[in-house]
Amino acid sequence: MRCPPPAVSGHLVLFVGHDHGLPHVRNASGRAETARHAVLPIEVFETFFGGRGVASCSGAHASRPDRETSP
Image (cartoon, rainbow, N blue to C red):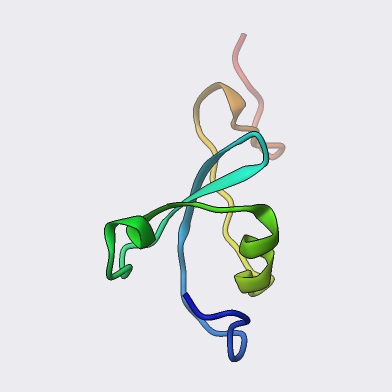
């Protein structure tokens, strides 16, 4: 891992959760296992975060304001 990153790029990782403020990410292009399945301090994550993302939710936590929900 380079610190800091040279520029904002288009690399995409999957944020899969967190534990006590430590983001858990999956990086399919990671060369080492620790890069493919990483847990890192939020300060390190923020250093590499390009300010873009995609959010998706499903199940009981999903909300569609344009649709009525069934009881």
